[in-house]
Image (cartoon, rainbow, N blue to C red):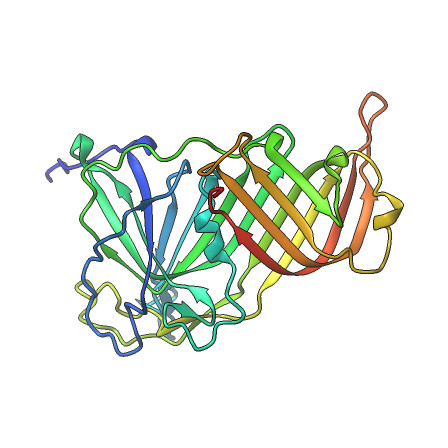
Length: 323
């Protein structure tokens, strides 16, 4: 028995995540061979964690009488997902987590208003142990933006892709943007009042309730299949669901202790200074009804903390730099 001689031991700093928006589907229902490696996946995402990615072949056992153990295994639908956490500097990628509800006529670069993305994940060739995967026809499954006191603004992102293929690794990606947005840049505007003095944390979560539809046939013999073999015919967004949670230093003021709609709530973060090109993130939530509020248990030598959740719908995100 020979000892495997080609082990590579990679480190997270070698990794990269890039993306581009797609002009249309790369793996349509009729696709039966692997698409070509996509050129032009050039927009570097970061700073962020090197993404986790999964390809699940969903094997299931074959059970039959006459045997006290499984008599076989057979593959099911191949399912692909990618997830990471971003420290928000350039927030333009976050815009694609929210669908366009007004697209007319139909925009073929979207699926029911949600933008099609091609993602590339891997390690670059600087140290000779490179690898890369491209995720095709990827859609935002969920986005969770958190702003917490004295912390960086973070975004937890998850995508579902129809398929993933091996790609040619980048030779040297370089360092992504590092001017991240922080708590000290944030305002919390409700009806013209900035309630930031009572805010300690806010979390905004969008879930696109994706569903994989059907399964392509097995394209090739087991062990030598196409990479898109047994993948879904498509991924479809169902209803957009929004959750908003606040951590507070004080009780909500009387003006917000109402069953009526608060109106538009705007979370705004912007690098200080003047002129164009400064990092910025705007999250606007149209409808906000106070759903739950409370106080946390607290010790004798600790500050009181309060919480509030709203029943909300209607969100827009603008991550472009100032103009």
